[in-house]
Length: 133
Image 1 (cartoon, rainbow, N blue to C red):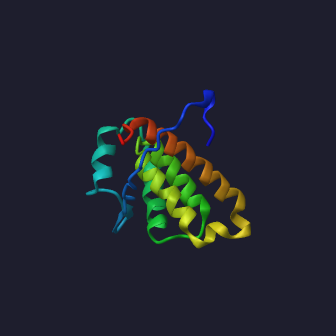
Image 2: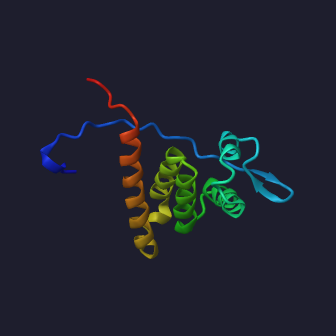
Image 3: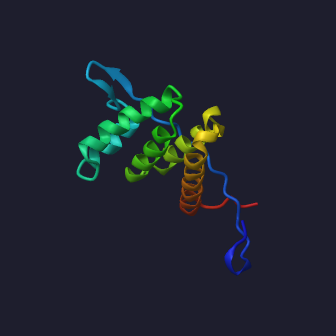
């Protein structure tokens, strides 16, 4: 990617973050007992309860490798809203590695997920200190 003012971009190696996997309960899927749940409990006012329930269901869809791009798109958006850019990036990567991402019916969604992944990479690389060579 060409830089503005001919600055040289310093490549930053981004380690993939684990995608939180919800566990099954009698009421559906829950993130209770996961590291993400502990973080979200401290930010409860920011994350609406309905969004949290939706995120739990979407993350289950990601875990079982659903063929619907909306599952991955929306999960990445909700994770980013919860200040979890690393797992959001991993969700985008999971969709782009999925065979369904190359289906002609999903071209537009795949392009949107790819753009979201690029934005997340820029955000995460800005947060990390570049590796010294």
